[in-house]
Length: 388
Ligand code: PSV
Ligand code: MN
Ligand code: MN
Image 1 (cartoon, rainbow, N blue to C red):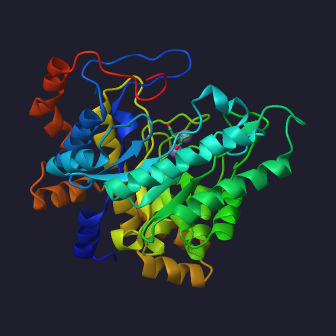
Image 2 (image 1 turned 90 degrees about the vertical axis):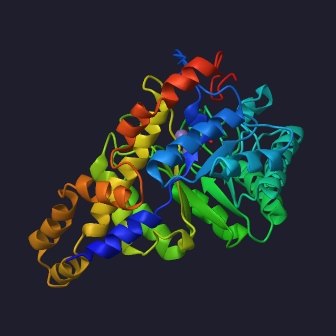
Protein backbone atom coordinates (compact mmCIF):
# COMPACT_ATOMS: atom_id res chain seq x y z
CA UNK A 1 0.00 0.00 0.00
CA UNK A 2 1.17 3.50 -0.78
CA UNK A 3 1.90 5.61 2.33
CA UNK A 4 -0.96 8.15 2.31
CA UNK A 5 0.82 10.75 4.42
CA UNK A 6 3.80 10.65 2.04
CA UNK A 7 1.48 10.89 -0.96
CA UNK A 8 -0.15 13.99 0.52
CA UNK A 9 3.22 15.57 1.30
CA UNK A 10 4.41 14.97 -2.25
CA UNK A 11 1.24 16.47 -3.70
CA UNK A 12 1.72 19.57 -1.57
CA UNK A 13 5.23 20.01 -2.95
CA UNK A 14 4.26 19.60 -6.60
CA UNK A 15 4.88 22.59 -8.89
CA UNK A 16 3.17 23.31 -12.22
CA UNK A 17 4.10 26.28 -14.40
CA UNK A 18 1.47 28.13 -16.41
CA UNK A 19 2.12 29.89 -19.76
CA UNK A 20 1.49 33.62 -20.18
CA UNK A 21 0.04 33.05 -23.64
CA UNK A 22 -2.75 30.82 -22.32
CA UNK A 23 -4.31 33.84 -20.60
CA UNK A 24 -4.69 35.84 -23.82
CA UNK A 25 -7.02 35.41 -26.75
CA UNK A 26 -6.14 32.64 -29.15
CA UNK A 27 -7.70 30.65 -31.92
CA UNK A 28 -7.09 28.63 -34.99
CA UNK A 29 -6.02 29.95 -38.33
CA UNK A 30 -9.73 30.21 -39.13
CA UNK A 31 -10.87 32.46 -36.34
CA UNK A 32 -9.88 33.98 -33.02
CA UNK A 33 -12.91 34.26 -30.76
CA UNK A 34 -12.05 37.14 -28.45
CA UNK A 35 -13.15 37.01 -24.83
CA UNK A 36 -13.92 39.86 -22.48
CA UNK A 37 -11.47 40.55 -19.66
CA UNK A 38 -8.37 39.07 -21.27
CA UNK A 39 -5.03 40.65 -20.36
CA UNK A 40 -3.86 43.68 -22.29
CA UNK A 41 -0.20 43.40 -21.33
CA UNK A 42 2.32 41.07 -19.65
CA UNK A 43 1.50 42.47 -16.21
CA UNK A 44 -2.14 41.43 -16.54
CA UNK A 45 -1.15 37.96 -17.76
CA UNK A 46 1.01 37.64 -14.66
CA UNK A 47 -1.88 38.83 -12.48
CA UNK A 48 -4.04 36.04 -13.93
CA UNK A 49 -1.29 33.49 -13.33
CA UNK A 50 -1.12 34.72 -9.74
CA UNK A 51 -4.87 34.14 -9.46
CA UNK A 52 -4.41 30.54 -10.64
CA UNK A 53 -1.72 30.10 -8.00
CA UNK A 54 -3.91 31.59 -5.27
CA UNK A 55 -6.64 29.02 -5.91
CA UNK A 56 -4.46 25.98 -6.59
CA UNK A 57 -1.39 26.62 -4.43
CA UNK A 58 0.84 24.69 -6.83
CA UNK A 59 1.40 27.06 -9.76
CA UNK A 60 3.94 29.58 -8.47
CA UNK A 61 5.65 30.43 -11.77
CA UNK A 62 4.59 31.75 -15.15
CA UNK A 63 6.46 31.22 -18.42
CA UNK A 64 7.01 34.21 -20.71
CA UNK A 65 7.10 34.22 -24.50
CA UNK A 66 9.30 36.82 -26.18
CA UNK A 67 8.41 39.13 -27.91
CA UNK A 68 4.76 38.54 -26.96
CA UNK A 69 5.71 39.54 -23.39
CA UNK A 70 8.30 42.13 -24.27
CA UNK A 71 8.72 44.93 -21.72
CA UNK A 72 11.34 47.62 -21.19
CA UNK A 73 12.27 46.56 -17.69
CA UNK A 74 12.30 42.83 -16.92
CA UNK A 75 13.65 43.31 -13.42
CA UNK A 76 10.63 45.49 -12.66
CA UNK A 77 8.32 42.87 -14.19
CA UNK A 78 9.92 40.24 -11.98
CA UNK A 79 9.38 42.41 -8.90
CA UNK A 80 5.77 42.99 -9.96
CA UNK A 81 5.28 39.21 -10.23
CA UNK A 82 6.92 38.62 -6.84
CA UNK A 83 4.59 41.15 -5.23
CA UNK A 84 1.68 39.08 -6.54
CA UNK A 85 3.26 35.90 -5.20
CA UNK A 86 4.61 34.34 -8.40
CA UNK A 87 7.95 34.07 -10.16
CA UNK A 88 8.98 34.18 -13.80
CA UNK A 89 9.62 30.72 -15.20
CA UNK A 90 10.92 29.61 -18.56
CA UNK A 91 11.66 32.16 -21.26
CA UNK A 92 10.19 30.96 -24.56
CA UNK A 93 11.71 32.21 -27.77
CA UNK A 94 9.87 33.11 -30.93
CA UNK A 95 11.68 32.62 -34.20
CA UNK A 96 8.58 31.68 -36.13
CA UNK A 97 6.51 34.80 -36.66
CA UNK A 98 8.60 37.13 -38.83
CA UNK A 99 8.40 37.15 -42.62
CA UNK A 100 12.16 36.55 -42.57
CA UNK A 101 11.53 33.05 -41.23
CA UNK A 102 9.57 31.77 -44.22
CA UNK A 103 12.37 29.35 -45.09
CA UNK A 104 13.40 28.75 -41.50
CA UNK A 105 15.13 30.57 -38.66
CA UNK A 106 18.40 29.04 -37.46
CA UNK A 107 18.35 26.62 -40.39
CA UNK A 108 17.50 29.24 -43.02
CA UNK A 109 19.70 29.12 -46.15
CA UNK A 110 20.38 32.86 -45.67
CA UNK A 111 23.16 33.49 -43.13
CA UNK A 112 21.67 36.90 -42.32
CA UNK A 113 18.40 35.34 -41.20
CA UNK A 114 20.29 32.72 -39.21
CA UNK A 115 22.18 35.54 -37.45
CA UNK A 116 18.96 37.37 -36.65
CA UNK A 117 17.38 34.20 -35.23
CA UNK A 118 20.42 33.32 -33.14
CA UNK A 119 20.58 36.88 -31.82
CA UNK A 120 17.00 36.49 -30.63
CA UNK A 121 17.99 33.37 -28.68
CA UNK A 122 20.88 35.28 -27.10
CA UNK A 123 18.55 38.17 -26.24
CA UNK A 124 16.30 35.68 -24.46
CA UNK A 125 19.25 34.66 -22.27
CA UNK A 126 19.77 38.33 -21.38
CA UNK A 127 16.14 38.43 -20.28
CA UNK A 128 16.77 35.31 -18.18
CA UNK A 129 19.65 37.14 -16.51
CA UNK A 130 17.26 39.94 -15.59
CA UNK A 131 14.35 37.76 -14.46
CA UNK A 132 16.41 35.08 -12.76
CA UNK A 133 14.87 32.45 -15.05
CA UNK A 134 16.83 29.24 -15.38
CA UNK A 135 15.14 27.79 -18.43
CA UNK A 136 15.51 28.83 -22.05
CA UNK A 137 12.84 27.03 -24.02
CA UNK A 138 13.51 26.61 -27.70
CA UNK A 139 11.02 25.55 -30.27
CA UNK A 140 11.88 25.89 -33.95
CA UNK A 141 9.22 25.92 -36.60
CA UNK A 142 12.00 25.21 -39.08
CA UNK A 143 11.51 22.65 -41.76
CA UNK A 144 10.64 22.25 -45.42
CA UNK A 145 7.45 21.63 -47.32
CA UNK A 146 8.76 19.86 -50.40
CA UNK A 147 11.32 17.13 -51.03
CA UNK A 148 14.44 18.75 -52.39
CA UNK A 149 13.47 22.22 -51.16
CA UNK A 150 16.63 22.39 -49.02
CA UNK A 151 19.35 20.04 -47.89
CA UNK A 152 18.22 18.06 -44.84
CA UNK A 153 21.74 17.41 -43.62
CA UNK A 154 23.03 20.97 -44.06
CA UNK A 155 20.07 22.23 -42.07
CA UNK A 156 21.17 20.01 -39.17
CA UNK A 157 24.63 21.60 -39.35
CA UNK A 158 23.12 25.09 -39.24
CA UNK A 159 20.93 24.10 -36.31
CA UNK A 160 23.92 22.69 -34.42
CA UNK A 161 25.91 25.89 -34.99
CA UNK A 162 23.15 28.13 -33.61
CA UNK A 163 22.54 25.83 -30.65
CA UNK A 164 26.26 25.80 -29.84
CA UNK A 165 26.48 29.59 -29.80
CA UNK A 166 23.38 29.76 -27.62
CA UNK A 167 24.54 27.07 -25.22
CA UNK A 168 27.91 28.73 -24.79
CA UNK A 169 26.19 31.96 -23.72
CA UNK A 170 24.24 30.26 -20.89
CA UNK A 171 25.07 31.17 -17.31
CA UNK A 172 26.13 28.37 -14.95
CA UNK A 173 22.62 27.97 -13.52
CA UNK A 174 20.81 28.21 -16.83
CA UNK A 175 19.84 25.46 -19.23
CA UNK A 176 18.25 24.82 -22.58
CA UNK A 177 14.92 22.99 -22.93
CA UNK A 178 14.78 21.82 -26.52
CA UNK A 179 11.36 20.99 -27.95
CA UNK A 180 10.59 18.75 -30.87
CA UNK A 181 7.50 18.57 -33.04
CA UNK A 182 6.56 16.05 -35.66
CA UNK A 183 5.15 18.48 -38.17
CA UNK A 184 3.59 21.89 -38.64
CA UNK A 185 4.12 24.51 -39.84
CA UNK A 186 6.52 22.54 -42.02
CA UNK A 187 4.68 19.68 -43.67
CA UNK A 188 7.30 17.49 -45.31
CA UNK A 189 10.26 17.59 -42.91
CA UNK A 190 10.69 19.37 -39.59
CA UNK A 191 14.29 20.01 -38.49
CA UNK A 192 13.66 18.70 -34.95
CA UNK A 193 10.79 16.28 -35.55
CA UNK A 194 11.24 13.90 -32.64
CA UNK A 195 12.78 13.31 -29.21
CA UNK A 196 15.72 11.44 -30.71
CA UNK A 197 16.81 14.44 -32.75
CA UNK A 198 16.39 16.76 -29.77
CA UNK A 199 18.27 14.31 -27.54
CA UNK A 200 21.16 13.96 -30.00
CA UNK A 201 21.59 17.74 -30.19
CA UNK A 202 21.43 17.96 -26.39
CA UNK A 203 24.14 15.32 -26.01
CA UNK A 204 26.34 17.21 -28.48
CA UNK A 205 25.81 20.47 -26.56
CA UNK A 206 26.50 19.37 -23.00
CA UNK A 207 24.75 18.44 -19.81
CA UNK A 208 22.77 21.68 -19.47
CA UNK A 209 20.82 20.91 -22.63
CA UNK A 210 17.73 18.83 -22.00
CA UNK A 211 14.68 17.68 -23.92
CA UNK A 212 11.25 19.25 -23.46
CA UNK A 213 8.38 16.89 -24.18
CA UNK A 214 5.35 18.72 -25.51
CA UNK A 215 2.66 16.07 -25.22
CA UNK A 216 0.85 17.42 -28.28
CA UNK A 217 3.78 17.03 -30.65
CA UNK A 218 3.69 13.33 -31.47
CA UNK A 219 2.17 11.06 -34.03
CA UNK A 220 -1.10 9.45 -32.93
CA UNK A 221 -0.46 6.38 -30.86
CA UNK A 222 3.07 7.35 -29.81
CA UNK A 223 4.02 5.82 -26.48
CA UNK A 224 5.00 9.05 -24.71
CA UNK A 225 5.64 7.39 -21.36
CA UNK A 226 8.36 5.31 -22.98
CA UNK A 227 10.06 8.53 -24.08
CA UNK A 228 9.70 9.83 -20.52
CA UNK A 229 11.23 6.69 -19.03
CA UNK A 230 14.10 6.69 -21.52
CA UNK A 231 15.01 10.35 -21.12
CA UNK A 232 14.79 10.14 -17.33
CA UNK A 233 17.16 7.20 -17.36
CA UNK A 234 19.59 9.27 -19.46
CA UNK A 235 19.20 12.34 -17.24
CA UNK A 236 18.03 14.38 -20.21
CA UNK A 237 14.40 15.10 -19.47
CA UNK A 238 14.21 18.81 -18.66
CA UNK A 239 10.56 19.70 -19.00
CA UNK A 240 7.06 19.03 -20.17
CA UNK A 241 4.75 21.22 -22.17
CA UNK A 242 1.48 19.63 -21.13
CA UNK A 243 -1.64 19.80 -23.27
CA UNK A 244 -4.07 17.41 -24.97
CA UNK A 245 -4.50 16.42 -28.57
CA UNK A 246 -7.13 14.51 -30.46
CA UNK A 247 -5.75 15.10 -33.94
CA UNK A 248 -2.73 17.40 -34.29
CA UNK A 249 -1.24 20.14 -32.09
CA UNK A 250 -4.65 20.87 -30.57
CA UNK A 251 -3.38 22.55 -27.38
CA UNK A 252 -6.45 21.47 -25.43
CA UNK A 253 -6.48 21.15 -21.65
CA UNK A 254 -4.02 18.57 -20.35
CA UNK A 255 -5.78 15.41 -19.24
CA UNK A 256 -8.88 16.20 -21.28
CA UNK A 257 -8.31 13.96 -24.28
CA UNK A 258 -6.52 11.07 -22.61
CA UNK A 259 -6.29 11.12 -18.81
CA UNK A 260 -4.97 7.55 -18.84
CA UNK A 261 -1.96 8.63 -20.91
CA UNK A 262 -1.29 11.45 -18.45
CA UNK A 263 -1.41 8.92 -15.60
CA UNK A 264 1.05 6.66 -17.42
CA UNK A 265 3.40 9.60 -17.95
CA UNK A 266 3.18 10.65 -14.31
CA UNK A 267 3.78 7.08 -13.20
CA UNK A 268 7.16 7.11 -14.98
CA UNK A 269 7.95 10.38 -13.22
CA UNK A 270 7.02 8.91 -9.84
CA UNK A 271 8.86 5.67 -10.68
CA UNK A 272 12.05 7.70 -11.22
CA UNK A 273 11.49 9.86 -8.10
CA UNK A 274 11.53 12.84 -10.42
CA UNK A 275 8.54 14.74 -9.08
CA UNK A 276 10.27 16.81 -6.45
CA UNK A 277 11.28 20.35 -7.51
CA UNK A 278 14.82 19.38 -6.48
CA UNK A 279 14.91 17.06 -9.52
CA UNK A 280 14.62 20.10 -11.75
CA UNK A 281 12.02 18.86 -14.18
CA UNK A 282 9.74 21.71 -15.20
CA UNK A 283 6.09 20.68 -15.42
CA UNK A 284 4.67 23.36 -17.64
CA UNK A 285 1.38 23.82 -19.44
CA UNK A 286 1.42 24.90 -23.09
CA UNK A 287 -2.21 25.32 -24.00
CA UNK A 288 -4.66 27.68 -25.63
CA UNK A 289 -8.22 28.16 -24.48
CA UNK A 290 -10.01 29.19 -27.62
CA UNK A 291 -13.64 28.79 -26.64
CA UNK A 292 -13.66 28.26 -22.85
CA UNK A 293 -13.00 30.82 -20.10
CA UNK A 294 -9.27 30.86 -19.68
CA UNK A 295 -8.53 31.13 -15.96
CA UNK A 296 -10.91 28.36 -14.82
CA UNK A 297 -9.62 26.22 -17.71
CA UNK A 298 -6.07 26.67 -16.48
CA UNK A 299 -7.14 25.90 -12.92
CA UNK A 300 -8.87 22.77 -14.24
CA UNK A 301 -5.69 21.82 -16.14
CA UNK A 302 -3.57 22.16 -13.01
CA UNK A 303 -6.08 19.96 -11.18
CA UNK A 304 -5.94 17.38 -13.99
CA UNK A 305 -2.16 17.13 -13.57
CA UNK A 306 -2.62 16.83 -9.80
CA UNK A 307 -5.18 14.03 -10.23
CA UNK A 308 -2.93 12.06 -12.58
CA UNK A 309 -0.04 12.57 -10.17
CA UNK A 310 -2.07 11.43 -7.17
CA UNK A 311 -3.09 8.27 -9.01
CA UNK A 312 0.51 7.62 -10.03
CA UNK A 313 1.61 8.04 -6.42
CA UNK A 314 -1.04 5.53 -5.32
CA UNK A 315 0.38 2.71 -7.45
CA UNK A 316 1.36 -0.02 -5.01
CA UNK A 317 4.87 -0.38 -6.30
CA UNK A 318 5.81 -3.28 -4.03
CA UNK A 319 2.87 -5.28 -5.34
CA UNK A 320 3.53 -4.13 -8.89
CA UNK A 321 7.22 -5.05 -8.86
CA UNK A 322 6.44 -8.41 -7.23
CA UNK A 323 3.88 -9.20 -9.95
CA UNK A 324 6.30 -8.04 -12.64
CA UNK A 325 9.15 -10.16 -11.27
CA UNK A 326 6.99 -13.24 -11.09
CA UNK A 327 5.69 -12.68 -14.61
CA UNK A 328 2.11 -12.32 -13.41
CA UNK A 329 0.86 -10.25 -16.31
CA UNK A 330 -2.72 -9.90 -15.17
CA UNK A 331 -1.86 -9.06 -11.56
CA UNK A 332 0.68 -6.40 -12.62
CA UNK A 333 -1.85 -4.79 -14.90
CA UNK A 334 -4.52 -5.01 -12.18
CA UNK A 335 -2.31 -3.26 -9.63
CA UNK A 336 -1.58 -0.52 -12.14
CA UNK A 337 -5.26 -0.10 -13.08
CA UNK A 338 -6.38 -0.11 -9.43
CA UNK A 339 -4.43 3.08 -8.90
CA UNK A 340 -5.75 4.63 -12.10
CA UNK A 341 -9.31 3.78 -11.20
CA UNK A 342 -9.10 5.33 -7.73
CA UNK A 343 -11.15 8.49 -7.26
CA UNK A 344 -8.44 10.81 -5.91
CA UNK A 345 -10.62 13.92 -5.76
CA UNK A 346 -11.40 13.54 -2.01
CA UNK A 347 -7.67 13.08 -1.31
CA UNK A 348 -6.79 16.23 -3.24
CA UNK A 349 -9.58 18.13 -1.54
CA UNK A 350 -7.98 17.19 1.79
CA UNK A 351 -4.54 18.24 0.57
CA UNK A 352 -5.95 21.65 -0.40
CA UNK A 353 -7.87 22.07 2.85
CA UNK A 354 -4.72 21.20 4.83
CA UNK A 355 -2.93 23.93 2.88
CA UNK A 356 -5.63 26.47 3.73
CA UNK A 357 -7.09 26.41 0.22
CA UNK A 358 -10.63 25.89 -0.93
CA UNK A 359 -11.04 22.17 -1.74
CA UNK A 360 -12.76 23.11 -5.01
CA UNK A 361 -10.53 25.70 -6.76
CA UNK A 362 -12.81 26.20 -9.79
CA UNK A 363 -15.84 26.90 -7.59
CA UNK A 364 -13.74 29.17 -5.40
CA UNK A 365 -12.56 31.08 -8.45
CA UNK A 366 -16.12 31.51 -9.68
CA UNK A 367 -17.21 32.82 -6.28
CA UNK A 368 -14.25 35.16 -5.96
CA UNK A 369 -15.51 37.88 -8.28
CA UNK A 370 -12.16 37.96 -10.11
CA UNK A 371 -13.76 37.09 -13.44
CA UNK A 372 -16.33 39.88 -13.15
CA UNK A 373 -13.63 42.31 -12.13
CA UNK A 374 -11.32 41.65 -15.10
CA UNK A 375 -14.27 41.84 -17.47
CA UNK A 376 -15.17 45.25 -16.04
CA UNK A 377 -11.60 46.56 -15.79
CA UNK A 378 -9.98 45.36 -18.98
CA UNK A 379 -11.29 46.73 -22.18
CA UNK A 380 -9.61 45.88 -25.47
CA UNK A 381 -7.64 42.78 -24.44
CA UNK A 382 -5.07 41.40 -26.83
CA UNK A 383 -4.62 38.24 -28.73
CA UNK A 384 -2.03 36.07 -26.94
CA UNK A 385 0.55 36.07 -29.64
CA UNK A 386 -0.67 35.31 -33.08
CA UNK A 387 -0.94 38.79 -34.57
CA UNK A 388 -0.63 40.61 -31.23
C1 PSV B 1 4.80 25.01 -30.77
O1 PSV B 1 3.74 24.30 -31.25
C2 PSV B 1 4.72 25.28 -29.29
O2 PSV B 1 4.35 24.11 -28.63
C3 PSV B 1 5.99 25.83 -28.74
O3 PSV B 1 6.18 25.50 -27.40
C4 PSV B 1 5.76 27.28 -28.86
O4 PSV B 1 6.65 28.08 -28.19
C5 PSV B 1 4.35 27.34 -28.36
O5 PSV B 1 3.73 26.24 -29.03
C6 PSV B 1 3.66 28.60 -28.66
O6 PSV B 1 2.29 28.44 -28.65
MN1 MN C 1 5.19 23.65 -26.66
MN1 MN D 1 2.73 23.02 -29.70
